[in-house]
Amino acid sequence: MNKLLTLTLAVAATFSVLSSAQASDFPIKDKPITIIVPFTAGGPTDRVARDLAESLRKPLGASAVVIENAPGAGSSIGANKVAKASPDGHTLLLNHIGMATIPTLVRSVPFKVETDFEYLGMINEVPMTLVSKPTLPAKNYKELVTWIAANKGKINLGNAGIGSASHLCGLLLQTALQTDMTTIPYKGTSAAMNDLLGGQIDLMCDQTTNTTGQIEAKKINAYAVTTTKHLTIPALKDLPTLQESGLKGFEITIWHGLYAPKGTPPEIVKKINDALKVALKDPEFIKKEEGLGAIIISDKRVEPAEHKKYVASEIAKWSPIIKAAGVYAD
Ligand code: ASP
Image 1 (tube, rainbow, N blue to C red):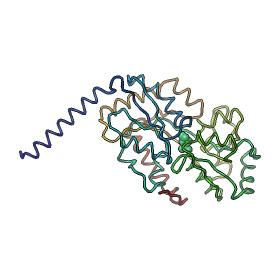
Image 2: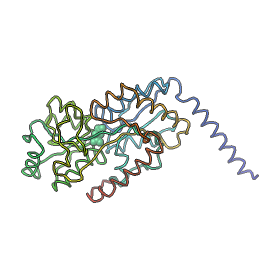
Image 3: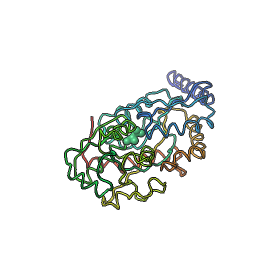
Image 4: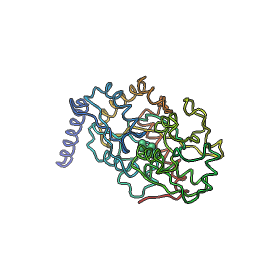
């Protein structure tokens, strides 16, 4: 055996011993697990992470699961932070459909969704709702369409930045209604919701986990849901779907998943995935999420490989739609 090969094998053996040692020590005592949320605190992605934290901490045996918000650029900033983090299982990313839309929407995204992450499993699916500021006069979808036509060029639509779910939904809406609105990007839809409540923006399309409370309290107007079926939760059950309201083929459902930096040892990936499966069955977590219209994943997409396949299928689904809408950012 030549010297170089011997050295290479020795280094590889050292790394594999190190990686299994790291894996058996995981989670490191007294070192919290940090879940990076790539949007502002108080919004729907943040809510999933905070709802999940304790349900995940217990089966993982971690000292703490803390949430860190790293918002901006439609989730790219937070996702990039995790892509470049130490692959020791202590820094994770909780992100949404942006994982599948960013590769098409943003030309210079500084990471690769397909290869820079270990996929840990899918968490939930969440419908979206089309909502408006409280003072907007339209009281149902039909009146909204009339109002939109009468206010061409004057309408502000809030979103959480290019590549976000609200951006994608707004894009589909403008395409379907053949109208242009001025999009106002925020770093998350909790911030956008504040301005919707205050009347600084007119419209928004956002996850039910951010809008249900405000709809229930009658603080904003709600016009339709983006799913193909009606929702069952009391505050939203009377809302029509956008499809039946006349927007043929309109369907968008948001999902959330959990990711670790590429190179996280497979034993750690398995430990986190095992804990995630327990967390997704925690009645407390289910109650918090399903009460706001989310559906917790109970099918094979909780498996890392299946979630990865699903994200790839979402990239394939959304890429031509986004390209046809012609929206790109650098
Ligand atoms: N709902 C946001 C979006 O539009 C993200 C967030 O604030 O959670 O993507």
